[in-house]
Image 1 (cartoon, one colour):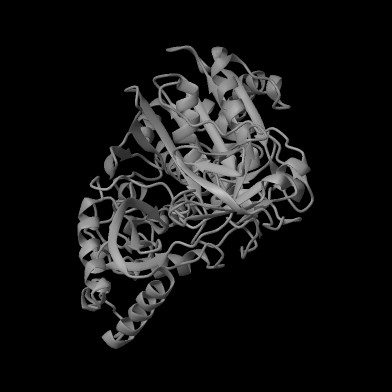
Image 2 (spheres, helix red, strand yellow):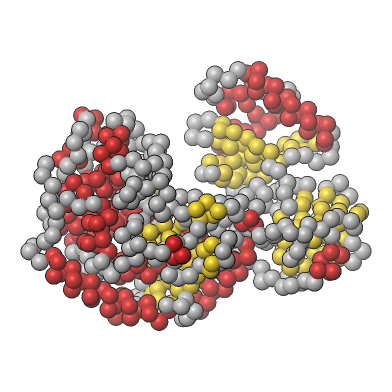
Length: 612
């Protein structure tokens, strides 16, 4: 079909865009300028959030947060107020560059809402309809995909697999990606069910290009971003200096790099990422986008209604709109939201439309990702409607006092704690990895993962008797692995445990954790002298793996010279450690006595969890 470059809508789009940009710029700048430095806070709600985030920095958080509000039923253009806009931690640990509120971060799948808005803009211009089949705009659509509509793409109901195997960094061209996706088998009939698909949104982005005659980023910049005064948003058109783009970090604290121009084509990312992720933006620009959606500056009222309506169930009580999820808050109001992340950069954009609040959070590390922080702690702190465990407020303990606490402590039952003084604090290592949360947050046994737990316990009981056939069958190996290989490996594990811990006594079910999205049934094997903690990880159809949870030192934070606390963002509570007279240590109600005061100090070791 012919490609039409949109330069006018109803004969006056350019003039209208200019007026819209000026109007939105006036309202946005009035709300944002007073908080440019990120130091001004308004209200007890913002103080609670700021106090929490400030305490969180030593435990690994780095990023930025913006919260704005308007009186219930108020007008965002005239009554909206930014109540908190502040950055925390470092954007570049190697150079010591602080994270600032003007940093430009990769927003991941928040990109999808811009693809949805671009489609709505084209529909407003009469260039397409979301009910149109994609075959009207894309060549080579096979028969099994002839029923897929643009609406299906925007609601993840086209029937594509949730993972077609492409990498964000692959510099694949648009038409090659389209052909590859169209050649892939469907996992459901179009419209049958929700199946989150990045590639489906890439196809929608390809339609934007083919219908408009413009590049994807160019169309968004002209018709969405600049009218909303979002000059800092895009893939590369804003041409930011690298000092405004934070580095991304791995969970172990090592630098990963930037999404920006990582394997990109000359005009932006490859099409495994384009139109579904990878756009960069600032806090201010995302807030300006929120303001634009509170008016008709970019989309008409009818287009916004269609764009923001939850069209299809997406699981967990959410319904999916065109690049947004529509949820109900704990307080009964509507939340229109979407997050994004690639394992290193995370963004959450949450619009509490009935309560007149918007929360936008960004982070550049996975230890405390914005995608968990915003819906859990930030929402609870701002609305004050759910408990939040506050990180400890640290005090400094002199080096000599810390060194005096170092040593090896044992309980009457033989459990061991090794305490070491670091340059700034204390590390403690316990025989029991469950004690300080190495197993992760656990759902209590018998809860929503009870079926997985019932499947796991018989495997262990059989293995304890030397029967490894049940665990072999639970794995359902697809590589033809023989039973004898599994039998040999499992036999070796049990021999080593019996050599180290004595005769086997029983298995204790601790609960179930989540490991990379899968339920991990967590148990402790009890032998005569303790035993390992194991996690059996279940995939959708089979046992995916098992692991012994290793013991590792954890960092303690001092609340006084004698009172220390272990805090992990992913744990639901604090673990307190008290040192008493006569060389005792008390943790979780268990008392241990120092048997050796000569545990070595560890100068130079970082105690920050994000570096582990």
